[in-house]
Structure formats: structure tokens, C-alpha cells
Length: 185
Image 1 (cartoon, rainbow, N blue to C red):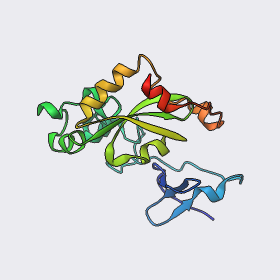
Image 2 (image 1 turned 120 degrees about the horizontal axis):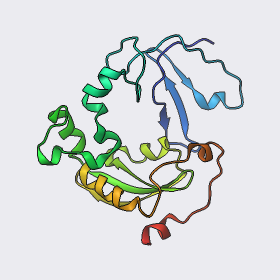
Image 3 (image 1 turned 135 degrees about the horizontal axis):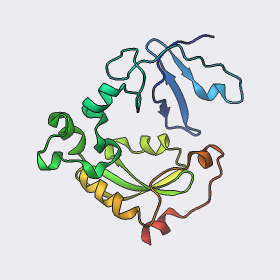
Image 4 (image 1 turned 120 degrees about the vertical axis):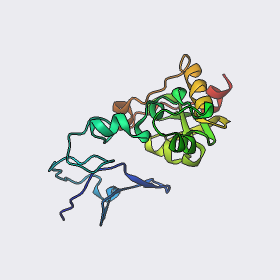
């Protein structure tokens, strides 16, 4: 079979095991069915996830212009402690930033490659954990906005990692950790 399309974040289905799908404009691939099979992938061009133009991708699927101009690529996406909507202060588009930043967020511990601390919108639980390859996670605290979640995460980074070691995760070399014990400490 031949599929053509833009590679984007895989869709997941919360089953045992997790089901993964590559979704294209008019079709999809059930990735779990490809495990232990040989596939060929060929790059035929670039397409910015925002403007849709065939331009070199700069970061996170966006061309350089969109990465620096669009609100969904703002610095506060990767660094929630930089969120400013709670102050009524615009970064790129206050309406968009208010919708995303001013909703309940969860600070959590997850075990993917190691124990790590992270932040996600409450509406993204457990999707965010699945995306990170976590085989277990526990909520530490729920806060009303992204900024408070961000400063909480920054404070906890002194005690626990905030990054997943993707090499370890892909090897499925998971150290058995008691996340409830980590939470209490």
C-alpha cells in the first residue's frame, strides 16, 4: 500500500495496549499493525502545519515565520512558566492565549524513561502521558492556570527530571518506581 500525506502527531486510542494511528487528510494507518514489519518512508516535501506552504520546517512542524508569529508556537507552550494571560498580558494573541492558559492544568509525575515532572491541561489527561510514552503517571496538583503549573514544575525540577530520555524509553528499559512515594517525598 502507498500512503501520501503530512506526518503529524499520532492519534492514540486508550486501550491495552495503546493503539496508534497516523492520520492523513483522507486516510489513516493503524501503526500497531506495522510492528515487526519493514516499511519505507520517503520525504517528498515540507508542509508547515500552520500556513500549509512548502517551506523548510524550522521547529515543531512550523516554518520559521509561523514559529515566531503564531500564538500556538509561543515560548509559553514549551515553558509554561512564561505564560502571561493570567495578567491580561498578550504574547501573540490574547484571545487564544486566554483560552489555552486560563484553564485547569495538572502538574504530574510520570514514569517513561525515568521519573519526570510535567505539566498538561486537565483536558489532556491521559493523552499527554501516552504521548510521552509514560507507562504510569500520578497527579501532584491541579491549578487554575498554566502559569501556576509552570512555576510549580520549575520548582520541582531541582528534585526530579523534566525531560524524557527518549533513547531509554524506546528501549523500553523502564525502572520500576513508586510514583506515590516520589510524590510524598
